[in-house]
Image 1 (tube, rainbow, N blue to C red):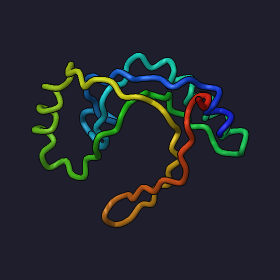
Image 2: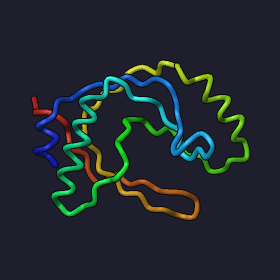
Image 3: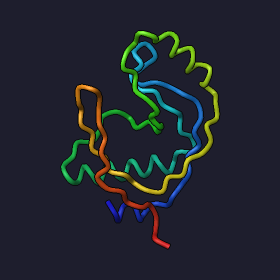
Length: 127
């Protein structure tokens, strides 16, 4: 993974608009849209290929660049959530820098998933 990270350049991503996965009728994940994403799409593809070479299964779903900002635990206030998100559909949230690959582990627990950082690898050549 280190050599893969060094082969890519650091980049920035433009964040704008909001959306949900899997769909608006059953929103489970709330995200910000990622634009100018060619670099992140290439990085994801190379990571996917590298992990497949180690025996990990490739995801069947097409990669959609996004930044997850929350998970929906209950659909109790779904209409209010959808209304609020619709006001942000065209909102500009600025840029973020992509400087490293962070390997994470998720553990599902009764209170929700817990996430743990396993490692962090800088992207690009060291200066």
